[in-house]
Amino acid sequence: MALKRLEAHHMIAIQYLALPKRGGKTMEEIGTEAGVSRQAIYDWLKDPLFERELKRQISRNTVVKIPEVVDAMVQASVEDRNATAAKLILTMGEMLTEKVDVVKTDVSGMDREELTRRIQEYQSRKEA
Image 1 (tube, rainbow, N blue to C red):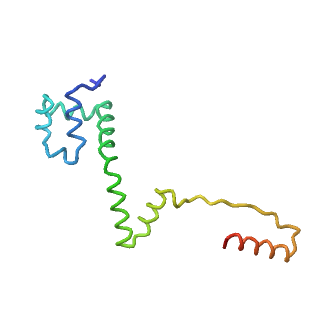
Image 2 (image 1 turned 180 degrees about the horizontal axis):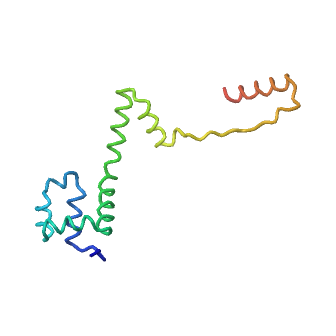
Image 3 (image 1 turned 45 degrees about the horizontal axis):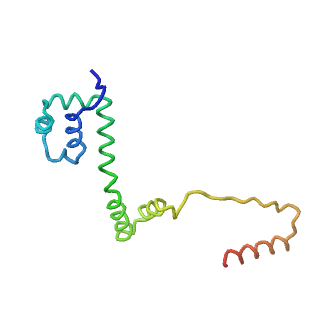
């Protein structure tokens, strides 16, 4: 039977299940903490509402670790000279993008001298 809402005993179980290695507890111990049987916990894990809330709690637990993960990636990219990690970090910091802007210029009808002048003008702007 599908759960219609989550109650305190569900949330107690979710708090442990969302931790790495279930917070060091067995399913039996989690059931005891929540005041239910071990089998009830296994049944809840199949319920869509319980599963959604468990995933949300895992996500909330993970968000606080993101700065540590990014720091470890920075260290790895420097120490191991890992270009892929460096690219990911720069992309995350919006300092690198895959986007390429292309500007079309109609060069039909231009003579060689005009094209040369435009190229030199572009190079001057680029250097400045």
